Image 1 (tube, rainbow, N blue to C red):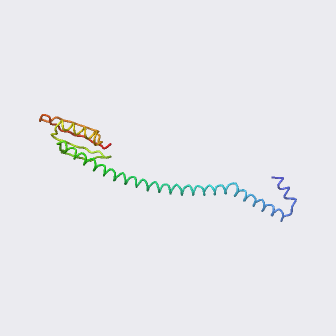
Image 2 (cartoon, rainbow, N blue to C red; image 1 turned 135 degrees about the vertical axis):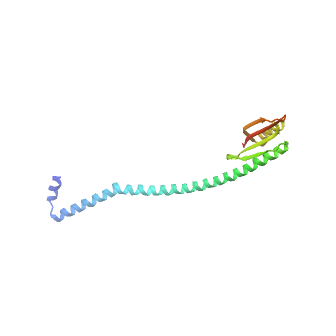
Image 3 (tube, rainbow, N blue to C red; image 1 turned 30 degrees about the vertical axis):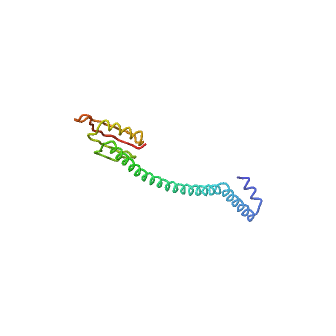
Length: 158
């Protein structure tokens, strides 16, 4: 520090002020060049990245809404298809359902009372191998009539 003061003492007051002003200007310029410039460019990069992310999020939300809408329409159509397939194949095998309850993910619960065991087995075979509807839960209970059963089952389209 003493060396700086001895160096400045060689000059008159006006030259000292000019040297200090130049040193201050160089210091401010270096501060801008080394610290503030990179911070500003990084901020600009982050703004661009944030804008791009916001736009991508908007596109993803639109696509998610479209997918959900298609999924909802597909579930309704799938449920209609499975119910009509069950009803027509039951009638073809001489069976009638006493209960039908739609469930989640295209699942349905069906109840058959006093169904012929042989017709039931034939109907289950047709459902599984011809219609592509799998049985995920099956409960069979005997009735007082010979060859007749009460059935509760859960079906799902594969």
